[in-house]
Length: 520
Image (cartoon, rainbow, N blue to C red; front, side, top):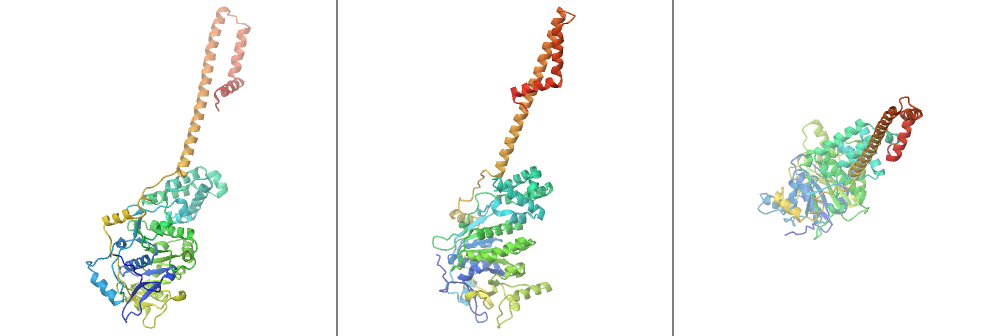
């Protein structure tokens, strides 16, 4: 049975500790948990377990969590740990060693999400909500192509053409190309080559499965900021093992979500605890080859979103993966071991050590190199937001299941989720694609009708001319029988026929037929 893990009266969450060789217990003050953090370390040093125990602690204190499950291991948060687990003795031994007297097994309220809608409830957004800056990053566009994407979004807004999914954007780009002559005078040159390049990148995105990410119903932010009936924060887990096959889509989708939180949440000042904690795993993917405008956007969000009550924790192998201006804003840090085999590795290790407040008892650089699996060098913000002295720390054991759950267990959790049925079925209301398609069909029908009327008019004119010639021949034959010498009537007929065959006569006939058949 779940027992709420209120770990101290000081409103902290317990990270770990150790015996005399490790120093004091390490805890994070909840009121400073929205001042962001860093979890770093080489592969296999324990970053995932650290992320798991932090998620557990925040949930127990009523703070909702959003994290991405890159390897599938974090799904175990939904189930309680078990005494028959092979590491049970090791967990209880560590809990005793670090003074974790309240240690017990517990499962946590979990909501599974998936951009592809396979291992969780679908997450969707619209093209308009993502915006041209992130779309350009996602599509790897040049500056010129990004400019055309901006024009497409701007014109769609002015023309009342909602851009919801990828087919809306594709239709809008086609319309832009067809009207480029008039639009270029107002917005600048619109190159068909650039439009073609964007369309090709959209095709690549579709092949990666991203078409399911764009559409409706779009995600409501309140659905990832829920608490359970007993007051625990819900842990939102994004299935990312398949998503990592499209790393740019992974990074851009998380950055979009972070940007939406920044744009929509109200200011809360300095809350007693965060409104949401957001873990950005594999953070290096966010910054690899990112244009300066995008890095500046991330820096702005990181700097200002804490006033919205959101804490952002970057999870990566090396602190050097995070730009220096952003790294300086990460106050709570858990640094697992870094390997240092090359001169570059040693330089990065030295730089990482220099970002901590020194502890006279040991060398920070040596500690980062030497800590074992499940150990870390930690530094948490203290009163007034000052960084604490760096400490070597044994990370506390998790209370939930270590490792992934089965597909049947995942399905059971999804069926019991409050999100069950809300996002599972996509909606396709009339938007840019449908509106432009109807306009094109109406224009084609109108052109077809005009062409048919013109053909009818021509046919009527031919029929009239044929009938007039036949009548003229019959009159001529009758007259020749009566009088081979001709006369005034025959001469008049010839004059009229001649005039009708001339330019003036044709104008008269067309004028009459035009009035009768309303041809062009």
